[in-house]
Length: 207
Image (spheres, one colour):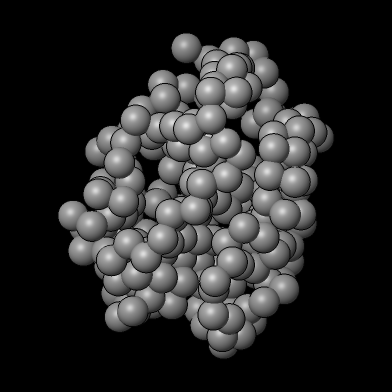
């Protein structure tokens, strides 16, 4: 089940930005939220980077501050149009994440920021396999997304947010053992940082 608020968040950029800003308060604000992937990350400005399911380019904006070769991929033409306007420094590709139009071993780093909860179990498995294919040897895959809260105080806020803005796939994700799923697909999981009472995970893995 979805609510009209979810539809508004996709239809109106100002509404999406407002919701994103409010949600990011739990980790110290939008700026800190979009920099979570930088912790313990070795920066090679020449690395080829993919912002997977880039949306309107919120994470892409931070990526281009550190890397010279950034590509954003999203299945939504509306999102791609917005991302090009917001972050023209990056290249963009309109495509489904389950079957990306890239050669094997193309990227050194793939980042996906709060997008995997939109996928059902089969899609999630396909995407992880695709990321493994397009990563260079020793390439890194960073997933930032929802997680089952470990602090009871965060259960009501996360449950309310998921009910208002997300679908059943988000509830399924917080029940999914992503580190195990990555390991089964050939990744070496290096760390899993939990934020906002455990309701958000920053999962780092390497091919």
